[in-house]
Image (tube, rainbow, N blue to C red; front, side, top):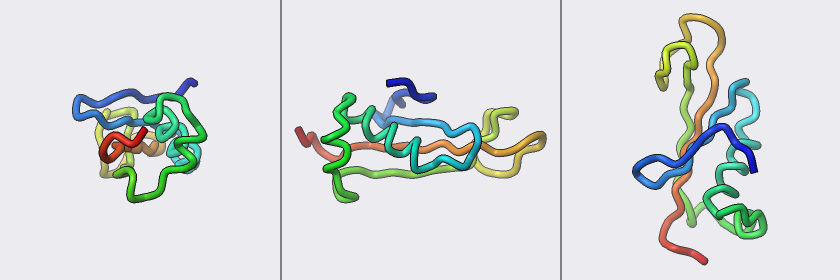
Length: 86
C-alpha cells in the first residue's frame, strides 16, 4: 500500500491529498493503513470505531489551515482508531 502520509507521534495515521479533491480516497487509504492493510477490517469499521479530522494544508508554507499564498491548498486527514478492535 502506498500513501502520502505516515504515523503521528500520538498514534494517528495521516494522509495527504495533494489535489484537495480526493478526500474519500485518502480517508479509505488512511483507514486501511490504520488497520495494517486489512481492507475488510477497514470496511467493517463504523464511525464509533475511530476519530477523524481533516484540514486544509499548504505545501508551500507547510502549514495547516488558512489560505495558500501560492498555488492551491491540499487536504490532510488524521485518523485514530478507538480502542484495540481486532
